[in-house]
Length: 480
Ligand code: UDP
Image 1 (cartoon, helix red, strand yellow):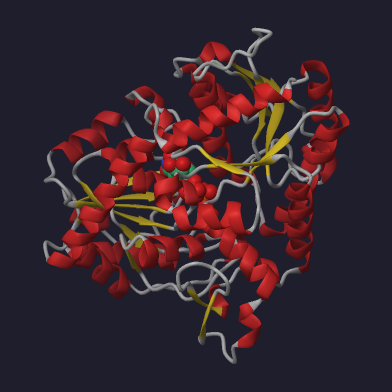
Image 2: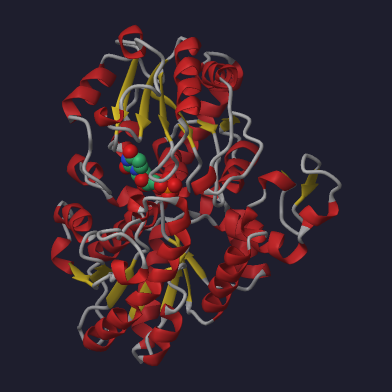
């Protein structure tokens, strides 16, 4: 189905991602997906984020339908260091709220772009709450992109309405999330502190109000993955949502899969040649997304646990050679030569996950990583840290039954991670997920089946493809 309307001018969508890789990557994929349907797309971003996006869309077959426009981000004026245009360049925890607040300074530039380009709709990140009012000024529908699953959205909403964590007598006593399909059990210390921190309560209130004013939401997910929660969201909560993912699957060839987010820190021949020598399902891929930074002592526990498991691994660590080697046990890399590969910096995650030697994914359960793992058909070791990651762990472990939890008890702010997982737990879960026994085999089979369903969903006529077409058709009908 094409994106032309009766007037034969293509539908035009403006995408406005929050400046963090976990938000930019899926929204840029989304722009590529719409562009592949003949939709004219514009991506708005700040000057220092533009090169990442440019590199990504340059590899896309539909790049002629994608434009990038930049809006100046006066970070110094906002109290941030010069050049601090992405969450990964915030130098200290106390500047995190400043960064969030300063994104309001993008409003003027955003409105200028709306007035110049007058797109059919705007798809903007949930954190840009003011984009609802700006879009309304120009009579342009705003669609929200949260970047999370509908399962997590439903849990979050029920948690905010019913506050079940207030009815337990201790942090470790579990409660069931009320009025949701399935028996979702949580403990108080796993619940996001966002419900307790004044600044976040205010931010979440604004997100909710701004969403009320928006036209609907676009979701990076697919119906077959979380059908009960998609139905609940639409039918019980009465909200408008289109699920059009997994978005990462819009990247077809190797080049497209490689250039997502930042510049890759390892030569493809190195990791690929290394993996090519390994047996199917024999390597665990360990990575904690774009934001989580563990302490050196936690990194050492991971190193010891991986080695003790006796299994093969690829481990992505946010360190460079200049950071010294104190975070590694002495002589570690020599000892694990041939068995383990450490990538310092940024890994081509989707490509690695799709390699047949990868047998499991140890992840912080960021939604992009979770869905990329599902699309690749690998079982998980779950190690949630912050945001809605404990909800994603529930989905993976209790509902989809394709994961083993490493045993994290406590939710943290990204800027104050104080979890401490001992090497024994890491060793045990790595052995368990890669085992050749019936239990592990069952998880592998379930994961493979979900991968098949994910790929089917984005094929022509699949559930996500149909939702995408119906969304584009609806935009066309709004032109009147
Ligand atoms: N990613 C990557 N290479 C890395 C680290 C992360 O390609 O070395 C990508 C990953 O594939 C995913 C995104 O960065 O698309 C991380 O998003 P996620 O929601 O998993 O976690 P966040 O970074 O938001 O915590």
